[in-house]
Image (tube, rainbow, N blue to C red; front, side):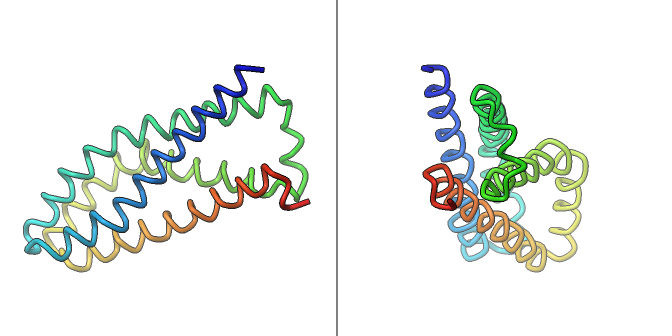
Length: 157
């Protein structure tokens, strides 16, 4: 059973790093960049700082996904996905899937170029869109984390 304990510790550590980073970007980095720099500099500063976290987020999201699926496998908990009382497991998978698609598919294939084009055309509007998107993802992520902690301790039964 030590493997499940280790997997849980790695899972929680990865989620803390990943969602904590999303909170930092949403609540500190984006407002700071918007208030401390001129519109022409915002994209450069945001991209430079955010790219330092992007590769870390990719690792954390990967570790969270692998450990989450491993824990489900080892506990033979697949049936929980059929039980409405375990809706928080669906939420975890959904949030993980959204971030996986954004980080590994949308960002490299579309979002990086979109951001660059939009920052040249409409920097203030673009930063507002990015801020709102991050705020939505952060809020959904925090709700999911809270629900997962409550649910894993039997709060929904």
